[in-house]
Amino acid sequence: MEVRNFVDGALETTAQVLENVAPGTGEVYGTIPRSGKVEVDRAMAAAKRAFPGWAATPAAKRAACLERLADAVRDHADMLALAEARDNGKPVSLAAQVDIPRAEKNLRFYASGIQHFASQSHAMEGVAINYTLRKPLGVVACISPWNLPLYLFTWKVAPALAAGNCVVAKPSELTPVTAYLLSTWISDAGFPPGVFNVLHGLGPEVGEAMVTHPDIAAVSFTGGTATGARIAGHVAPQFKKMSLELGGKNPAIVFADADFEDALKTTLRSSFANQGQICLCGSRILVERPLYAKFRDALVAKASAMVAGDPLDSTTKFGAVVSEAHMNKILGHIAKAREEGGRVLCGGVRLHPKGVEQGFYVAPTIIEGLGPQCATNQEEIFGPVVTLQPFDTEEEALALANDTTYGLAATLWTTNLKRAHRVAAGIDSGIVWVNTWLLRDLRTPFGGVKSSGLGREGGFEAFEFFTEPQNICIQLSSSSS
Ligand code: NDP
Image (cartoon, rainbow, N blue to C red):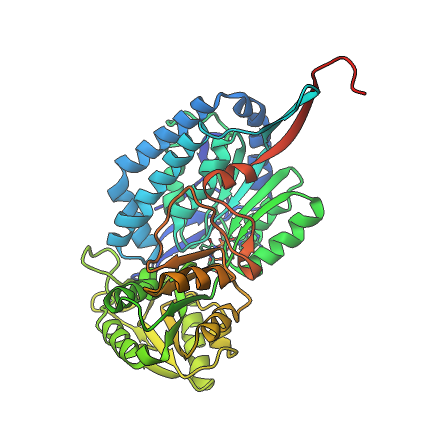
């Protein structure tokens, strides 16, 4: 598969290309453009030219373009799910049930949302009326990671476009294919040339050229905390808007009064779904001491029974991690955990599933015996690796949960209603799930605190990010004394 850029309404290649590797097999199966400043300059110029026309297009017409793009995603859902599984290593069943339907929903949700988005007015009785215009920003950069490729790509571009901005977007170079396929349907969906541009290549090259471009009005970025800090260093001094959705080290707190089977089943999922490569996965499992041994043994038994397999096989539930480099990074974290004195209760090794022996597979791994301050409990691993820690009191659970520089999400298991509210409010994170995990309502604010990011996306929060408020004050009488 030859991935191409989409600039000013046309698909194009670059002089240099990069290899695209399928993590499930380890094989090179395509090429992607190696874009840089030249491509960014051209995409930016096209987007700038297109902006006045797109900003003046009625919201209902912009929404219709997004709806047609959503139709294309729906019509090609099977093909997109297979493409995502091959490109990312995730099980095709997961891509078909979660990633691709959610990409379609993102497009439709923001197509509908912009037609319900209203701004405020403030009456100064008898004196004046103030109202707030929400104006599109201009050309915005949307940069997304490899873990949920089309899901997070559409999560950004849909509200940006709906709000009247032109977009220069870049998916991760590790997983470019579904964003490329989407870009082949942009013109047919009715977007004028230049409104929606998609560039491919390396983050430090094309991504860096995007976020340092003087004409970029805002940057919406999802990815690692170190990259987010680097981007903020470029964007903040130019006083451009930025939204940063970054890493996490999320706690899952299990009280002894939890519904055991529900907590167990869901914690298995929150630990190992997408091979642990979801920013919302719970990686530090804190269990109240009376339940600790029972919960640990049951979780280890279930994790040990998980079978890794070819992502393209429809029966596979646990696939490959995204790349060889990422696999080695995860295995390095496990080695470090051992050095720190951690007991690896299951997994801890690379796997070579039958038929796809050369792919990049790491066994579901559970580690105990480590204190809260060790690197394993502080650094984001972003793979199928979780730790277990016991706690004795609610206060201790909260202290452990908050003992991290991150603050993205948390999961809490208890049947005590008062405690659920108390502990949820005490956790420093953008999201807390009580007796569930990854239950998402697209209207809710999404984002993290501390090193997990800056700002919120989701629902109308995304429109607030992608628009600039302007207050207009109209005096109602001729004198204003
Ligand atoms: P990276 O930070 O490495 O990359 C994210 C995106 O940024 C990619 O498209 C990457 O391009 C690009 N990029 C890299 N360097 C630069 C740069 N200097 N300037 C501009 N863009 C750049 O993250 P990963 O792709 O490894 O994603 C995993 C991380 O994302 C984890 O930390 C995870 O927690 C976080 N994440 C956060 C979520 C949230 O909502 N808070 C959701 C999902 C993931 P390329 O890959 O081509 O180099």
